[in-house]
Length: 271
Image: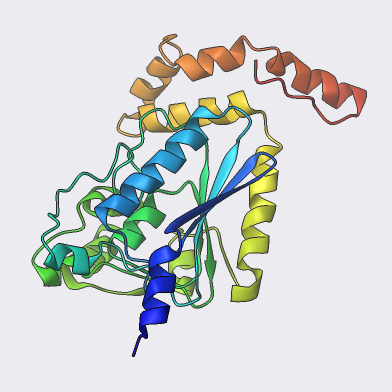
């Protein structure tokens, strides 16, 4: 039973906590007991990720969650029962803050500490890189609730063999961390106590890369995902990919080879 003191403490606790560590922004979702996300929390996440997108000094984000049982239970069904609609305003980044954020060309790492359910799993599917604790599991129960996991219905069949994706979407098949690793949904599975250290080490490696190169890779991936190889290469050479063209013409494109030949770390200027 939750006491009034505990309830007051939960109400006073910020739902989204962000901390800057050099070029890395760490974003923590903290909504006991299951880190479920209502529309207001999603809009708050969208605002944090938009600031991440718009701050040149920030290079990579780590999205994690408080506790050790739930990464996120997804859509807050208590809010739904209170009248919040399935198609509520979740902010410009969509549910969870970043999966549909326009102009985001910086990597997001999800550090999955436990159950990623429904919209929580959809957040993971939107990430660029994923580190999972051994206790993590991934589950889409929506079809059994009379709704669907809409963005997962788009992303998952592109990431898993069709019959596996269909079983997850139609029948609520749960994937544990080892199976998620086997299907390529996560980069690594680690002990729970090592989760954030592993995510931070990965973020540091990403941050060592040239920012304009990372932005160009992100742009090429987004703009060519729906194209066949001939069409993708035609777009690549068309001059229409702004981040790619900026990278080619940048000072950093000269700095990298020069630093390599001089035997020193490159000094990226982001220009």
